[in-house]
Image (cartoon, rainbow, N blue to C red):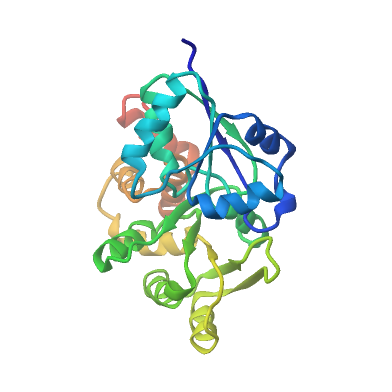
Length: 286
C-alpha cells in the first residue's frame, strides 16, 4: 500500500486573512488534521467552513500520538499538522513527528505561511542577513544562564520568544550578560495591539518595570559587534597561533568565515593570509 503524506501547514498568528489558498485547499483535502489544541483549531477551521476529523498532538502526548499518526499515514491517509499559531515544528513538538516520518520513510510536505520569528526580524531594524533563532529560555536558573552565556559572543542577530509574565526577568538576565545592546520587542504580531518597540536592553528593563507587559513577545537582539569582540579577545589570544585562535572562536559558535575575519582584525593581518594559514594547518579542511 502506498503511504500517505504529512503536510506541515502554517496557520495565521493572529489575522485570519493571512492564511494561504494552498493551506485551505490542503486542510479541506486531508483525511485527518493533527492540532496542538483541537478546541482552538476548531474555531479557525469552522471560520473557513472546514470539517475534518481532528486529533490532538502536543508536548505531553507526542510520543504515543505520534506513533498513531504514523500508522494512519502508512495506511495511506494524508495528515495535516497545524499548531495554535504560525508554522509547526519550530519550537514545537511537531519536530518529533517530522523525525518519526523521516525514520519511517514518510514524505513530509511544507506548506509555507506565517512565522512569528521571521516577521519580527524583518521589522526589527536589526541586521537580517545572519541570525540565530534561540526559542524560549529555560525556567531553570542554571540552564537559562548557560544558554545566555553560550550565545553572548555570537555576532549574529539573536531571536527569542517570551511570555509576558516572564519578560522582565528575561530582560534583566539578558542585560547582565549582553550589556546594553539594541533590542526590538515585537508583540502581538498581526493582531489588533501589534507593536514594535525598538530600544536598548537597559531601557527595556526600565520601561517594563514601570509598564507591565501584555501579549506574546518576540525579542530580536543585536549580535556582538566585531569591534567589541576584538577588544576582548586581543589579550586572550596574544600567545596562541592563528589556527588555535580561529578554532577557539569557532568553539564559541562563530562560523569559520567570521572567525577568520575577526582574527584578521585582531592581528592586523590580511584576511587572505589568515585564511591561507588556517587551511595550511588544517590539511585543507574548510
